[in-house]
Length: 466
Image (cartoon, rainbow, N blue to C red):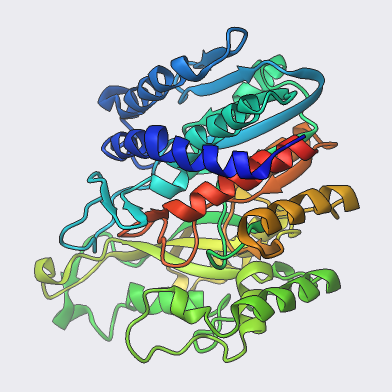
């Protein structure tokens, strides 16, 4: 019989004694994802993080447990911890150890590679996205063993390219199918929460596309006084072309082919989320004083975030910093675009639509290029079986005294779609420890330690009960 009080005590002690000190060491390693560190093999940070984790794992394993590392040429490695258990039931626990880049704007006393434990928060890049996952997964195994419970076969799978869209993951699924087994349940610890008061389950994820949009009008820059009014501005054309796909006032994405109908049960789910968080959505972001949101209605805001196509401008090309800008009409202008697609939208249709709308009939017969870097579909969970949902809700009640909340996520986790294709019969539990103000990918990222402990305890109980 699973004892939740014993589980809670174990998690509190194990986190304090084993996880927090090691997580602080992990934060110090700038193991950027390969998209942000093309020379990752030479810099060696990914290997350093891998070796650190392996050394930490060894004293925590049982005699029959195995650490397996595979590395295909030119690809980041994959780490699988094979935990002995009932071969008739297999649970996969997924996480990643690659990181987003530093980003500017960190508080003066903080930094991306500087672990700072401040009260209940541990600051540093990768703390909650997703460095804690490997340690939490091992805590789940050890807590169950401390109660002498029968374990399922557990595969802890850790990759190093998730922040680059898990681009290195599929070759391992193809090359080593036996390595991952045939999981009945796949648990991802790389998602988030709307508050720190209960367990949150992710029910849908958006698809995404990264693309470079470039407009060229000149072969070389010309004096702005001699060229303006004669040569069309590449930046003005760029604005004009973007208006084909986005209403610049409302942010609405215009092509109908880029939207889908919102399932009725997801709208009910969103209303349930709003009943919990109320009007606190905007306050969960570090907004400037007085900023209003895109919508006055929180339900509409969450629908846009989770089930409508949205556009973000990530960066620019051929536009110098103001202090370096001469009085010159530039040859061209470019932007790095990030689209988030509804969970059920076909990414190929989305890519074709955007390529056509953005590049056809170029104004002034200029040159327009759209270079699509990556396009991936989203994910929409199937309905949870009653006994499965009961295990989830019971765990949330046991550690938070509140039921679990189910929500769509405006972000993307590429590996989920990949694994669903390989293991179509597996049930997914997608949860995680990042909540309001944790600011993953941005400055001042932190993990809320008490919440992470409870999430880990919840997942241990769910694994035991399913």
